[in-house]
Image (cartoon, rainbow, N blue to C red):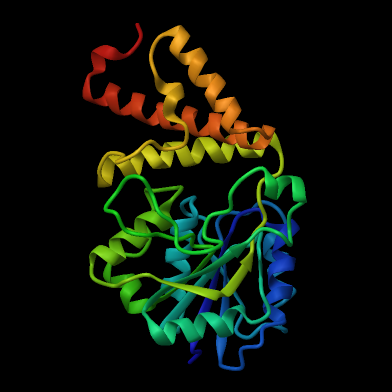
Amino acid sequence: MPAVSVVIPCRNAADTLGTQLDALLRQTYRGSWEVLVSDNGSTDQTRLVAERYAQQLPGLRVVDCSERPGAGYARNVAVAASTAERVVFCDADDEVAPDWLEQMMAALDRGRFVAGRLDGSKLNAAAVTRSRTLPQSTGLQESPFGPGLPHASAENMGIYRTTFESVGGFDATVRILEDTDLCWRVQLAGTPLIFADRAVVHVRLRSTLSGMWRQGWGYGHADALLEERYGPAAAAAPDRVIRSTGRLRRLAGLGRLINRNRSPQALVWTLGWHAGHRAFTRQERLMADPDLAPR
């Protein structure tokens, strides 16, 4: 039985998955381990890319999780198919450092729920990294809403299987920030989250304006969902001045928004966040009062 299962959720990741699997080939960890590529309904060559590594990586398996879209669901299916007590997560479009698995296992010796450090310098152009602040590069992430507990990205996370299963795994209904939701539920159940600063994952950031808009929209929508679930914002989330009412106030808020987000990427991401957040809150209001719907 392997000591740890490495879970990689993916959907149409043929262009980047090989980079991640090559990085796993270079791991310094000398214990027994397996790799589960959880294919969430890919229509490209993702499965073929993964299968090419089956003879090189220990226990590599492709798990079919095409029944329902979502990274959380894909991870849940892979964990159910795993055979190790410890599980670590990484993403198909990133690159783990050579000693990543070794450092994650050392961290899991100290605690049952851990998250490593994210680095954006290796896989991204300087202009992209300058356009935003990368979370989880110096410590765990914090949110201005919710239960007041830290959280982390599942692209660099480790947990004991029994701890994961005790809270029901990822909530598959939360399509984005499902990792934040998991972090809070695990900690509220009594297991602390530990930062493993030596376990490094090199992340690939969105570089196109359309990609930034879609990601910002998704995060804004998810933020609003988690605010609804865990409690309202205790402080302003990203530049919410744009939500003020009245044309002059909106124009003034937009001016401040532009001034605070000097790069096009940062501005587009923030505008997308507001659009996604407003879309969720309006949907919630309509569910509460159908008379608000336009005729």
